Amino acid sequence: MRIDIITVLPELLDSPFAHSILKRGRQKGIIEVNVIPLREFATNKYKSVDDYAFGGAAGMVMMCEPIANCIDHLKLQRNYDEVIYLTPDGELFSQAMANQLSLKGNLIMLCGHYKGVDERIRQHYITKEISIGDYVLSGGELAAAVVSDAILRLVPGVMNDETSALTDSFQDGLLSPPVYTRPAEFRGIRVPEILLSGHEKNINEWKHQQSLERTAHRRPDLFAKYHS
Ligand code: ADE
Image (cartoon, rainbow, N blue to C red):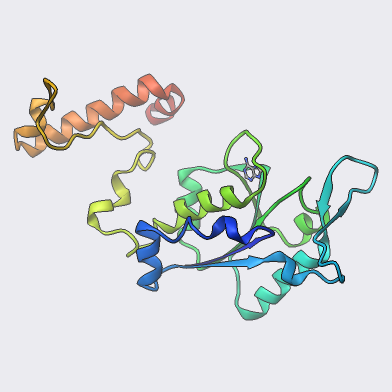
């Protein structure tokens, strides 16, 4: 899978894909992340990518031309399954959406800045708009990193068995159970005895019960969906 991220702040995306699971996935050649500085596609001598809003609203708007030029340029090289715009008024991101997007081949992500992008870009180029939550970030970069991370780790071969996504919170609609490591006793607090028993069936039942209790307590909204 390949993700091309269009941004006015490429430096912000230097680190998120350069470590741990995603770094290994990139080294194995299974996933590719390409950060594209939007300013390279600016057309005037000042390399502008934003301009005043028509109608006198406060704040700047990202201009059509650099974005259109950039997306056209990318599309000449390959086909894209989705052109995603990260924006607080997009569809709320979820594990289900990450699962679906992880099955795609090539994605473009456009990071918004200032007051957002000219509506004509949204209408004519963008195929999907995603929000990562009901709060406003200074730009779409961190949202693009969050969405890309959630998608890319699911691509087959990126994770090994140890880091398998199948047991993640949300994958079965429940939160994960608590986990413990050595020592079996820490400052007088013991690991639940059942986890030391070696009895796989009982352990799995215990984990499931813990997941149910945790979800019911912390996320009654998820719990209600799980039972419906
Ligand atoms: N850009 C600014 N805030 C955002 C959010 N909550 N989700 C996605 N993109 C954003």
